[in-house]
Image (cartoon, rainbow, N blue to C red; front, side, top):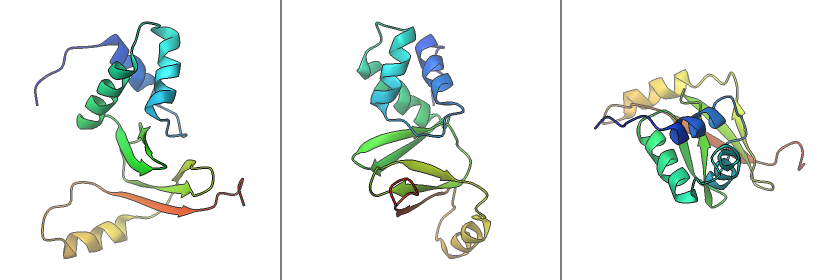
Length: 126
């Protein structure tokens, strides 16, 4: 993949996502990054989020409540998605290694990553 020149806006988007656990949408990223860069466009935010995902710097979570969400955690981990409020929660300390090992044994190709999600009703909505 071609090298990309440094962008303060892209760096700001990445820094905004790092350390967050709420998996924001592009609109939320835009509203927050716009405070520092008032002239940034929503299109620029979308392009940079997609580029960061392509580069493996963030994860793009698609198919959750109709909007893409973004996660700075790129390690193998699972999510819990509330079917009521659509909140996405990282599931910590879940041992996915046995599942990955079994999948590798049964997969006709080479597995390069893992994402998993569970759905239900979060404790706030229950």
